[in-house]
Length: 457
Ligand code: FAD
Figure 1 (cartoon, helix red, strand yellow):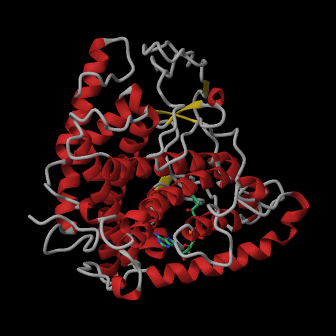
Figure 2 (figure 1 turned 90 degrees about the vertical axis):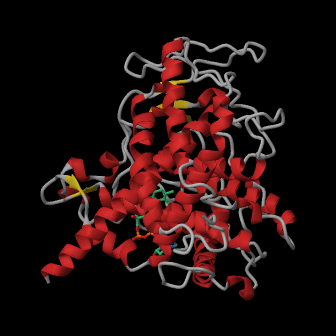
């Protein structure tokens, strides 16, 4: 079969939605097993509370703090606790501190102080090392000792009520990273963090953000796919948009679509107090937007390819899953391999080799990487703890997938030069894959529900 070219994305002549859905039926159980039952993949270490938003002053109520989000709910005091944004976005389960830094020469696992119910046995990694080939900001780049461990299974990504101006500012800023050409508004990459307006200087910031938001909307419209499900060619090349820029947009839009899918799928019904799928939410955010669903499938193909490519690298005996217990290590490894093998079931699912090769392509690579890093920094501007957690997991996951696709050669299993993957990158990659497998399943179910609702009309 022919691969999905980033040019064609999901094309029924090559890999169709149906093929990816079929693949997903095989992949999803294996990913669920890996991410939900192993200690290594069900916990994530990150700097959740100690970094402030580097791009705007989040103390002055202009952006995504809980205050902004709460504002958008009517009569907050009248509604039950369980429904409140603060409650919904609260993190559950033990939050353990990193036990400290191990001497670098000692490449042996340490016993962490993670609390009994966490069951994590190894905490040491090369996480503090920054590699120029990274697409994300290493979580502990600035403050190694401030990382927290969070249980991903106890904090599922779902509806939190986070919305309004705070959430929109973050999405707008994320899409603005897509303007590869320099606009009058300084992109986050164009200015050092310290140069951003803070305190009184932030007074004009709202206006600047509004203008930037309008620009982002224009950019989005310009880059949007035609509203047809199977797109052989978007024609954007002739519109002066190169492939790489379009791929960047697709990754972001696909991530946004995936987040929307999860919050619609696991939604809190205000009246009954029960969690479940909300068809109306899906209809509004996804159903009429074939481009968003197409971008979601695009991400599925891209991450699947990265996971499949990683298989030989993770088979290397040198890769241990941070446990003293050989049996546990072997069990985690076999679960990982099951996922990588199933991900490889559709050969050539995505052809990354056409990117960064022609025209300005090679010089765009660094730009692409820097923009992705900025998106990862923007996660510190998300004003809801659970959303920030999953936002960080997923940006790191996509960043890792891009790193595997574009920085690792074909001989990934044997090459001495293969970049080191940090523990957080691996965990993020497989959990992001898990999120995508869940999204495909949910979209399929929503489509059935929508057809049934239509029949009943
Ligand atoms: P938004 O989703 O905020 O979208 C804003 C605008 O972007 C839309 O009006 C549309 O023009 C455009 N747009 C929407 N989707 C796409 C797409 N796929 N591609 C291109 N353009 C698009 N809320 C939760 O309940 N749970 C969460 O876990 C959660 N996580 C979040 C993580 C991050 C990083 C961010 C920034 C927000 C998160 N939110 C979460 C909030 C949620 O994403 C929405 O912002 C919120 O529900 C408000 O939705 P909305 O309908 O106003 O549109």
